[in-house]
Image 1: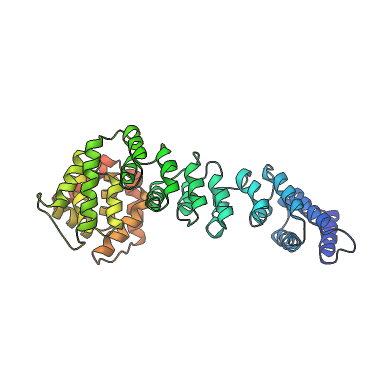
Image 2: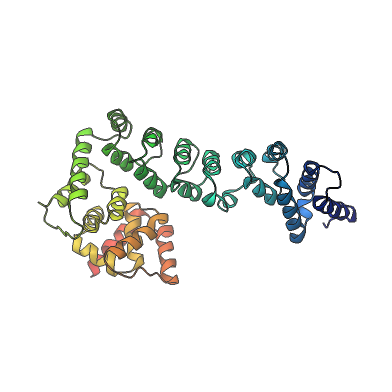
Length: 366
């Protein structure tokens, strides 16, 4: 339904008043235009919506903050509010933006993604405190350099934090002590990452980890000490295959303790320990290391996807594994459109058991 002549007349008059107030308060004009936008938003053409936005943005610099806050408070709980108007308020001072960011159900994750990456620390912290934010948002927030944002995110029990974001947060907790407690208290923190944190958290938190993540303390301590030695001391160029080598012993101990998991693979790959990555991955998929390398590095992206699926590496992390492993071996990390489709099919169609069986069959076929 189009705007009536009366509506168009009102909007034209409001636009004229915004340019030349003629004794009418800018606050009144701002509220009047916002109210018209709210009431007629669904009927406006794109040109009319643009005109409304331009008028409101121009006025917002001169309108009392109390007026803008009052509008934000009113629209935060209004499911009929135009998204353009909500996004404009989100881009205002944090005092104005906060109620909309925290409470508006009309504001979807897709809309938040439009501004969160470049937002201020206060705006990001408000997003981090919002209920039920999804993984694409938490992944961006986990990369923030603002401690308040990171702590707020980790303390938000309703935030859905994926494997990649947890990896980022745990690594940042090495230097940000205030993340230690909130991270360990999260029930969805992957156990392998909790164990990794034993390297730098307090004794009290180590006790909490051992008590709540069902880890054998003796095995954990042994595996951690071995990991410290290998990751810090073994040069990237080393390619141990002897079972008496410290790297092989580390893989054996982690496997025996039930701690040789996807998180460990991602960690050593990020640190450039490609040979340790190969040994650990080969052990997890029950393949001889040279056979694993032949399949993983020479059979294309589908083989990498099968290997990732077999050990529980998420689809969202596949690109990281593929790119970093190729870069380390000076292999082009290119994927065609058809290969991308094959990768997607692996994660959608195959269980971990099926992916493992197919990977091993490919290796045996030579």
